[in-house]
Image 1 (cartoon, rainbow, N blue to C red):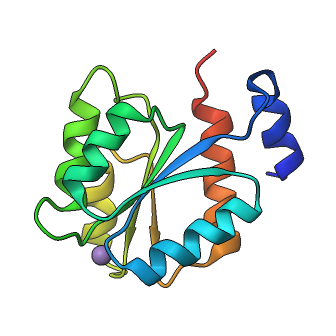
Image 2: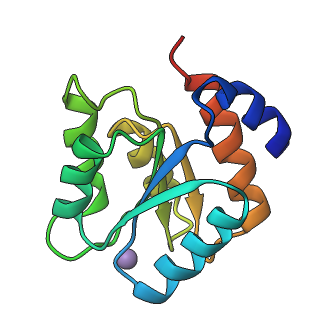
Image 3: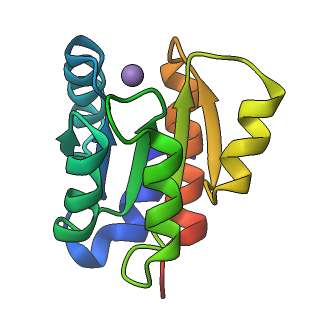
Length: 140
Ligand code: MN
C-alpha cells in the first residue's frame, strides 16, 4: 500500500489519517511517533491504558496501535472495552507485543483486534498493515 494511495483515500479530508499510539515505553513511543509523522500521519499518543481509552473516545483516531504490556489496564483490556463501545468499535486496532506466541495472536483476535504485530517493530511491515487496514476499514 503506497502512501500516495492512502493519501488519495483520505484526500477529501485534506489530511492524512490520525493514529493513536498507546505505548508506555517513552523511547519506543517517541521513535515510532517520529517515524509515522515522517510518513505524513497525524499522531496522538498515550502512555497507559486509561489514557489510551479516553483519547480513543476524545480524539477520534482512524486507527490505534496498541502495545499490550502496559501499567495498570493492559492492552487486551483496553481493546476489549473499545470494541464493546458503540462509539469506538469501528476503529481498527493493531496489537503490538514483544512475544511471538500463537496464543497472543489468537488472543488479539479474540478481544477484537483487527491485526497483530510483534516487537521489535519491523517498520516496513507495520506500515503495510496500517495502510491496508486504513483503506479496508474506512467508513464510507
Ligand atoms: Mn509496554
